[in-house]
Length: 131
Ligand code: HEC
Image (cartoon, rainbow, N blue to C red; front, side, top):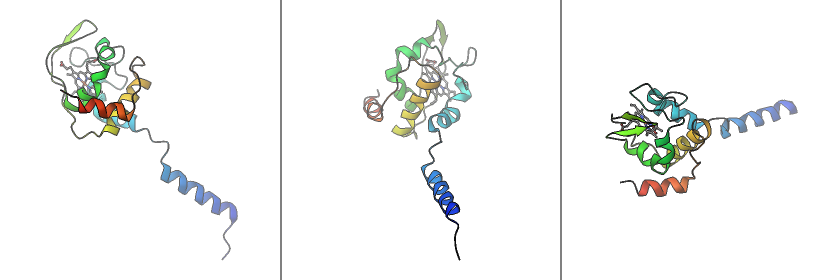
């Protein structure tokens, strides 16, 4: 049996594409799954219940704590853009360092550009220091 050459290359290329899975955006998937229910798809927040992430002074000022906040949740009153919030944010303890890095970089790129992108090493160091 003779296999056509173009077909053979097509098979190789689609195989490589499938393996690389290069178009998947893990940050977006993780944000949608773990954050958007409360904070909104665009980080707009939900009235008096959930604070916004987009344009949130609290987030911008405390961005160094973000990895710990996501991992361990939050408690007690905070003020975001002049508005008080006081509800528990649940912890998500099963997230990996890579997950956290992807979520933070997704927020930086798509929701609040004043949040600086982070490296995996930075996230690891921050997690190590969570109080
Ligand atoms: C079940 C709802 C819920 C989910 C899910 C949730 N949060 Fe929150 N988040 C809250 C609440 C409520 C607060 C306010 C906490 C307080 O009053 O102490 C908060 C506060 C915050 C803050 C600080 C306030 C601000 O807006 O700057 C950040 C940042 C934040 N969340 C990010 C995230 C990220 C990122 C995720 C996903 C990994 C997430 N949250 C998932 C409910 C949620």
